[in-house]
Every structure is written in structure tokens, then in C-alpha cells.
Amino acid sequence: MDPTQTKQGYQDYVDKKSPNSPIAKNLFNAFWTGGLICSIGQIILNICKERGFDITTSGTIVSIILIGLSAFLTGLNIFNKIGKFCGAGSLIPITGFANSIVSPAMEYKSEGYVMGVGAKMFTVARTCFSFWYFKCYYCWNYIFNF
Amino acid sequence: MNINWANVFDWMQIFKCFIVGGAICVIGQILIDKTKLTPARILVIFVTTGAVLGGLGIYKYLVDFAGAGATVPLTGFGYNLAKGTIEGVQQQGLIGAFTGGVKAAAGGIAAAVFFGYIASLIAKPKMKKQ
Image 1 (spheres, rainbow over the protein chains, first blue to last red):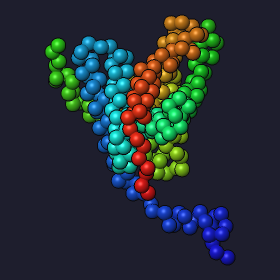
Image 2 (cartoon, rainbow over the protein chains, first blue to last red):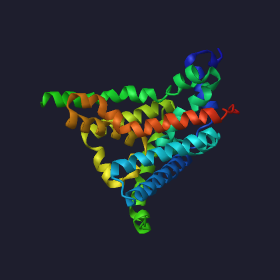
Image 3 (cartoon, rainbow over the protein chains, first blue to last red):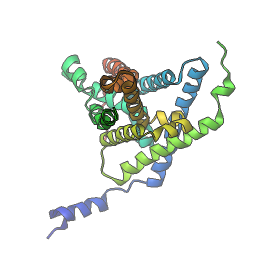
Image 4 (cartoon, rainbow over the protein chains, first blue to last red):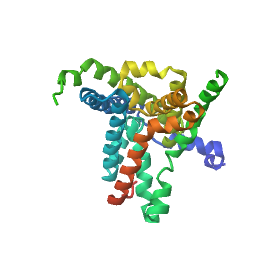
């Protein structure tokens, strides 16, 4: 029998045929691009601190600037190319979060601005918010120590 | 206003930030390459991990050590949510548990919605060429 007919056989066939991603190169690219984005953030943070904002406000300003930048790049279709090169290096910093909001927003534009963009914008990111309630164990902690 | 550029380009701090931020991204890259998780799931995993570590008070040490290297990755976003919740609880009691977290992250979320909407108004999605 043809090995591709069974599920296991097909899986082996796919594994053999699909190109192995060069892991060392990917890791290296993710490392330096991720580090670079964080360093840019650190420089913005330092400038904000020098200007006399407190640490929380500076952190928010850094997020807003990085999100704006990556939304801009996503709009120009540059972020796709960067993302292909960096892998996790651009996905894990807050730029990936912005990208996950901006790209569905652009994608669903054809369905209209209210039910398309407005409703689909958080398709990916909303899962983050729902899982965030995981940490409500902190509320329990609070109640029991009350 | 005068800016002391020596403080802005504090190379030791930027180096620590680079190492920690890079290391967090490497963990993400390993998850992408070695497992069959989709990027969306990885985003969720990172935010949740950050929130849990922030809630346990472990992530704070990393933030003190690396600055933006720990806050710019998504784990820092989760840490922000957790920190906001804790502060909310301390200030307002139980109601703070519901308002605090989103308040802390409000800047980032609002910015993402705002810029996302603008980008969707201006830009056209390009079909991916396979």
C-alpha cells in the first residue's frame, strides 16, 4: 500500500518533504532583532525619564510609540517582510501585539467599517484579555487575607 | 529642556536590556520552531505567563534588572495587567480587581485601536504571494 494513504505514513512523508527550518539562524535573528527592539524601547524610556515623567508614564509612552511604529509599518506592508526575517524577534515584543490588531483590521476592511473593522479588530488579541482573568486568583488571595 | 545624553545612552543598561529582550524572543522562536503552536497562541502564552509571573512578584526583579528589555516583550504587557490589578486592589478594594488591570494597559490598547483603525483606513492589504 502507498505509505501516504495512512495518517501516520502521510505525516512521515510530510516531515520528510517539508524543508527543515534552519533553527540556529532563526534563533540568532530572533535574538538580535528582539534585543534591538527592546533597546530602542529602553532609549525612548530613558529619554522620557530625562524629561521628568515617572516610570509608569514612561512605560506607557514607550508602548504607544512602538505600537504606532509597527502599525505604520504594517499598513505599508513592510512588517510582513520584517516578520519573515525576524520570526519571534518581531512577534514577541509589543510590535507583534500591534500587528495582531492592525492586520485583521486591514483584512476585514472589505466587510465595512463597523461590522468589519470594528468587530474583527481584536480577533487575535482578545484571547489575551480573556486569559488575563487567569490571574484573578489574586483577587481570591485578597479576599482570604481580608 | 536639556537632556543629559549620557544618561539616555547608558550602554550597560541597554546591553542588559538587549540580552534579556533577545533571550525572551529566543524562547518564542523555540516555541515557533519546535512546537506546532500558532503565533496567536504564542502571544496568549506570553501574556499569560507575564501576568502569572507578575502576580507572583517574580517578574518585578527582571524589570528592575533589564528595564525595557523586560517590559517591551509581551510578558511585560501581562506584567502590566497584573501590576495594575494589584494596585487597583490595594487602592479600591475588590472593585479595583476589575478596573485596575485594564487601566494600567489602557494606553497600549487605546493606541493599538487608534493606530489600527487609521492604518485600516489608509492602507490596502496586499495578498500574500506564496
